Image (cartoon, rainbow, N blue to C red):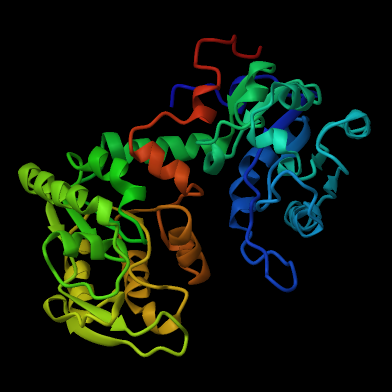
Length: 402
C-alpha cells in the first residue's frame, strides 16, 4: 500500500476523526446487534490511538435513514457494545456536527473515545456536501479512514473531509488493501476463486480482472443460472440476467483461452418456491423442471468443488452457493465453509454475506482473512480506484512525525 497510515503521523493530544464502518446488523424486533465483527475489526486502530494518547472521534453510518433522524438507527447501541469491548466508556453525541458536538470533543482527554451520531442522518453526507465536510473537519486535527467497506463511496466523511485535514489510512484499511492486493499481485498457486451470490453483473469487473490470475473458477449460487442459460441449459423459473447472457458466454470463452478451469454445477437443488416451507429436490442440470427454480448446488457439485478446493494454495470466496437464509437450501454453502475452515491454505473470505456466513457458523477465526468490504471489495478486485483510498496522503507526501 502506497498510502500513509496512522503510524506515520504524530497523534498525541491530537483530535483524530476516524471514519469507521459500524454499519452492523440489528435484530429486527429488539434492535440488538446480531454481529459485532465490524466493530471488532477496527479495534487495532482505536486501541493504537488510545495508547498513543490521541483524542479519538469515531464517525460512522448505520442503516439507511435517508437523511432523516431515525431513532432505531441511533448509534447508542454501537457505543454500548464498543464500551463493553474496550472496557472504557464511549459516549455518543446528539449530532455529528455543530457547536454542542465541538464542545464535547474539546472536553475529551488524551485516550478518550467519542462516537458521533449517525452521519447519514444528514442527507449532505451522501451528497458529499462541501459544507458538511468542512463541518466535520472542524471537529478534528487529523483524519483517519478505517472504513474499507465504504471506501468506494464518494461521501463527505469518506472523501470530502480529506480535503481539509491530513488524511491517512487506519490499520484495518491497510490490512484490507495489502491482503486483497496480494491475491491480485502474487497469490500462491493453484489459486481458486469460489463465487456465488445472485448476480453476474455485480462480479463482471472482478471476473475480468482476475481471469489471468486464477487457475480455477468455481461458480455456484444464483449467478450460476445465468451461466447455465448461456450454455443453453433449461433453468426453469430461476432468476437470470437476460442482459448478461452474452457476458457470461464471453467470460467462459475467456476462461478457456486463459487455461482457467471453470466449473459450473452438474446438479442442483430445485424447489417450487423460495420459502421456509418449501422442499428441495436434487436434479442434474440437464433435467431442471420448467416450473421449478434453483435454490442450491447439488451433492455431486459440492463433491466436485471440494475436490478442486483441496488442491488449492489460495482460495478467494465471495457469495453463497444457494439461498443460505433458508436452512434446507444452505447445505452447499455450509459445506464450502466447513471445507475451507479445514484447509491449511490461504483462505480469503469476501465481505457481505460470505463474511456473515462464516461468522455465524463460528468459522471466521479459522480463515486466513475475512474482509469487511462488500461493494468496495468487488470494485477493488475489479481494478477500480476507491475514492476513499485515493483521497489519502501518499507515502513521501508528509514528513514522518519526529
